[in-house]
Image (cartoon, rainbow, N blue to C red; front, side, top):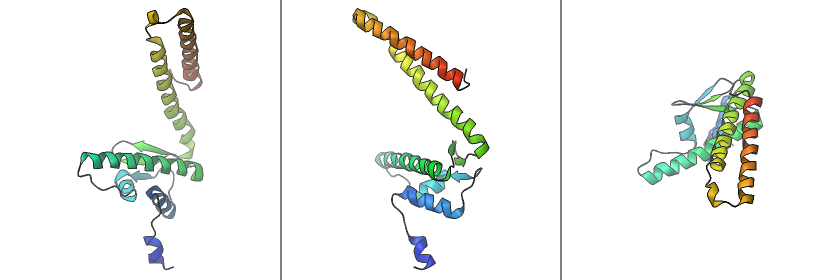
Length: 155
């Protein structure tokens, strides 16, 4: 196969082609990958309708998730979104701190939401057993929230 023929080879799904192109180019920590480049590699064209825009959004989110997961597991490279630009490859010496901060915030938000959902319950509509279960759940969630903040260094 000629070199031109190999350049024309398109992998499916499109995120695999983006990965192959990044591997060929030599992706490195500190590098920024522009969103426009990713959209082109994912086959996203300018929308002409709301349905197109929604489809593009879904395709982009699915593709970038797959690309991020594969870069992380295959190449040990973590991507982090840079608002208005694209994605930056996190430097190895910053990856642990960045992951703890990002995922710690996600955990804290999820536990806070869960805490609110079990706290703001119409207790007068519950029987004694259900009120006890609710109180136990609130205590457990409060302990988890406190522990996660402490363990992840968040206040």
